[in-house]
Image (cartoon, rainbow, N blue to C red; front, side):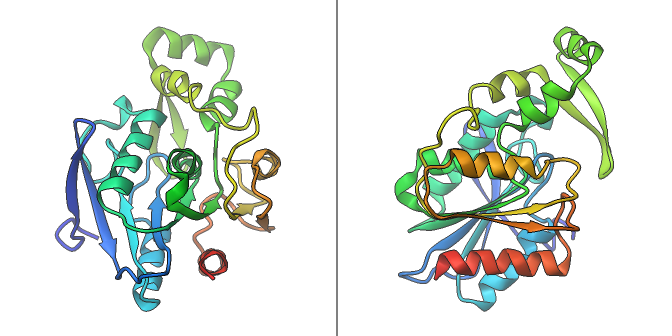
Length: 253
């Protein structure tokens, strides 16, 4: 999909230009959706596009956006961190969306989703996490680095790790240090709205145990995990996307 085919708007926030798009129409009395992409991802991915199409059919509204340093937003990816991307999400919620929201977070977007719910509890009707990855900078990056890799990151400020999805991904010391200011799984999480977690058992990037840890720490009494036994990290097959929509519908109802 080219930039010309994909029309988006922008807003100025946090010294950046944040690109966003709104699909469908707001329907009074029904929660709208906000999609939060993953690390090194953007708003044109398969899950966001699927949700947009379903929202249009269902006369519901979806807002999606690119974090700074991602997609069509300004900034360099290597300069960003969890706090920056949370600030981008807050700017979109406050400037673009209306009414109650169902937040849908993919991978890192699941972490941003939780932080957003803590920051704007009165705006959130429910959460749907797809391979949600809270605390990944500590548990799935820093803790898994070798002594040599940690020394290189501390010396150079960045290391590059191979990715099966494309070019090597930069992980910066700033990302790790800032991530420590936003860790959630070490204590109870004061989120009480309904939560749905979709997790692949074969996920090599975010182990299924992360979903169990998250469920344990959430204060909500309505947290359900749906394990996809043969599911990997992306969870973008047709059956995975249908499962995602069922989770959204269960909250919307």
